[in-house]
Length: 260
Image 1 (cartoon, one colour):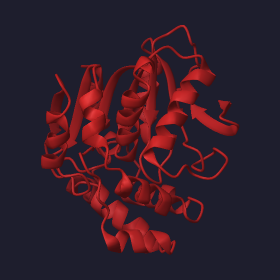
Image 2 (tube, rainbow, N blue to C red):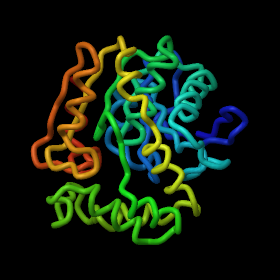
Image 3 (cartoon, rainbow, N blue to C red):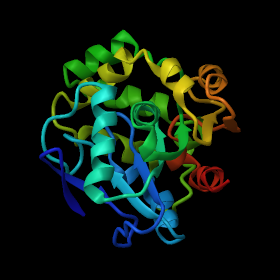
């Protein structure tokens, strides 16, 4: 559906069912350079099992208008505004990579709007290497290649897609190269500049699950555990052999973790 959020014409996928504000809400927040399509399986399952689903294309991404927001804090405030615009109940926020930082910051800044957190491929600090930042700033296709090679686990690079006929590596590159110039650099800079994860984690009071990939090269498992230790009562699930883009690589395992 199209919805105006803070004056921005925004596209929000609803999992194949109309959004019903009377139901518990689940918000799926994509990572740097991606869009709602990363959540194909999970959004449809939640929408057909009693949830009102919102999977936005963040401003400047996918089918949403405007320029991308500059900071994780601005993106968190936008998620809170999205919930207001949709008339949603306090929501379960499910974020991947950059989206996990947005979800975490939203819980810290707008606690009354958040019922639970699920943080996928996350870490206490999301430092981005200088070569990737430089390539992204130059809109060099090498940035797409680096993000894809480092983002997918080993199985994904040898034809391990669970959906017959689909190619994970090629699909990832196509989504990234569809971004407007500057969007990926904006997102990676926002992640690199965000230093408040541990402070935000200390403020979290809702049930929280961290889903980490054993072979994640973008957000190594040990760094995710550091963040988990800062969130009181959180639980951590590690997907054996998985890389960073788990909701695509291991859709069924991620869905099972989200259901728990």
